[in-house]
Image (cartoon, rainbow, N blue to C red; front, side, top):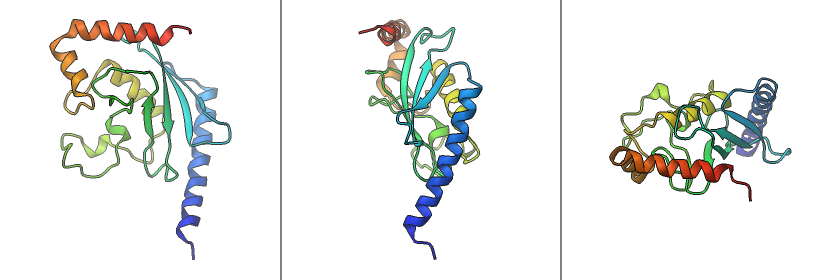
Length: 178
């Protein structure tokens, strides 16, 4: 009979194997728009991500570090992604940097977010590449139906020029060397 700790450990080992394989694949065959690595070589559940601002968007030219933290229950539960750029300004990024996108939400009914379709939410078949491609896409095409940062959403819709200037400052700061 397995106790809760054994089950958690075995699922954590399974998740670590999946993550190791995904990391190897992304290192061997990089995808345009981001790069990946581990925060600590001994911890497969915490990844350092570098997102490149997508060409043709306000974010173009920027380099935005993010942290991708996977739960021990991965792949059954989604990771949490947090931009580490101070004051990251986007309608779908909380003020603390956490990314709000359907692919990172558990596949369960959410009465406060009913416009989000179940098929857009997390499924164990999805991997790191799917998450990061979705986040890069989100930078150029925000979801105004469920903003995580209401102020950024209002700013973008009511004062597009002011929003653009703020993003250009963010981009400049993201590539400045201290």
